[in-house]
Amino acid sequence: MTSTARPSRPPRHPAGPFGWRLLRAWIAAVLLSATGYAALVWASWAYPPITLYGTLTQLLGTPAIFQLLHRLLGLGQDAKLLAFSGVAVLWLGGLSLLGTLERPLIAGISLAILCILGLGALGWWLPIVYGLVFWALLEGVNRLLAPAPAGAKPAATHPDPTRRTTTLGLATGGLLAAGGGLTALFKSGNAATTTDALLPGDPLPFGVTPVEQFYYVSKNLEAFDPRLSAEKWTLTVGGLVQRPRTFSLSDLQQFAPVTSERTLSCISNPVGGPLISNGVWSGFRLSALLGEVGMQKEARFVLWEAADGYTESLPLGEALDPEILMVTQLNGSPLNARHGFPLRVLIPGRYGMKQPRWITKLTLSAEDQPGYWVKRDWSRTARVELMSRIDQPPEIDPGVKAGVPTFIRGVAFYSQLITKVEVSTDGEQTWREAELVRPRSRYAWTPWQLAWTPAAGSHMLSVRAFSGEVGQKTAQKDALPEGATGHHTFEVQAS
Ligand SMILES: Nc1nc2c(c(=O)[nH]1)N[C@H]1C(S)=C(S)[C@@H](COP(=O)(O)O)O[C@H]1N2
Ligand SMILES: [Mo]
Image 1: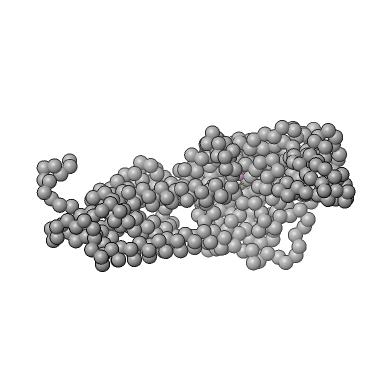
Image 2: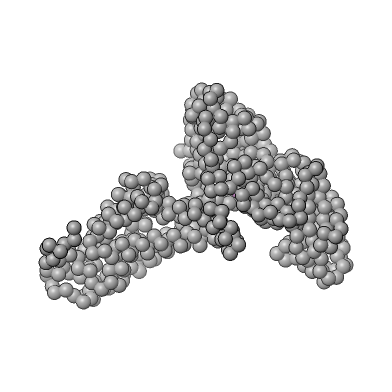
């Protein structure tokens, strides 16, 4: 297959030194990425770097690797930013190396094959388009910037000065464009469709988390979270229903409105962690929607699908619970893009992973389809564990004034009523009962407080909550796979 039979045929664009070839390939790679991003924005085409990121995070979500990374780095958006930067380097670096191949067509074909093999989620036609575009870009960049064909001049050892200037100019331009694009991209994560401006001016009820402080967790890098348009968005309800139907946002107004204060927590929230918040949600009952479309008798599961490919499911028997809400508002304003505009589901007593945002499809099915995180070995049912947390003094800055009366404050949460919260200031030798602030809703967390005048010295604080017979164990249990629980404990200095 190689050209040993006709060795005299020169390559159409003699390569020049490797560094220059790499630079040209890099320019083509940046152009390809920019084109792909435009196609994502304008035509919602899948974007290979994101798919690559998805594949990688899927890997990172497997328990062993997750736990290792959790120990080493902790969890959070920083870790994801790191992962995405890694992906960007992999993608651009890989493309640049491919682009140094002597024949651009081979580089294009290799890209298509690698994408088809490695990123199955892309299908096959998109990789082919990518391969073709990469080929065309490489040809273009080479034609513009490579040393003149070998036939015209003897092989040059380096490109002539004007070409070099043009190359450097284009490379700098590419770098600036890429930088600008990335900045815009990361900024845009917070912009679009948010409706924070419409937040009512009234102070929020005690214990309700303001929208801007509401915890946020996503399988996506935030910049790639869906930003859905109110006009174009639809909810498609189908499968084993009697009357399949597509609802627009205004169609949803036919359902009786319901408002409910509810606490939401991420299953990966560690003991004492910040991934839990409490909001006033408005929407309508899932049972009303199911009533509207009617259920076939073979239907056993409700399957949700979201605009970011996130999936979850619930047995139909549980899904008929009238307390399950499809919500469109948080704290009196339409959901913002970050928290699920225009529609998300809220299932009492379950962690956030059971509750998709940006819902676009609801299907009744005879078979279960394990959800996005369930496939990655997280809990199938994701029922919340009993939790309690000390917020004051804050664990990150645990200093108090000796001899001055103060309060130890915090929250406790469970799927049932919190009946008692106890606090220890002496390393769990003795416990005192805290005062509970009765929640307005049985689905909201319970704030608590305990008066305390610390003596000078160090004190070991601990909290434990009770819900009837259910109590918290001293030992902390890891978040994976069923959610963390245990006493929140840390040391305070009184001086
Ligand atoms: N579509 C979609 N829904 C999703 C997720 C997601 O990545 N995509 N993450 C889930 C997880 S793990 C949690 S904890 C909650 C977080 O909701 P919040 O960021 O609005 O607090 O959303 C859930 N719903
Ligand atoms: Mo979560």
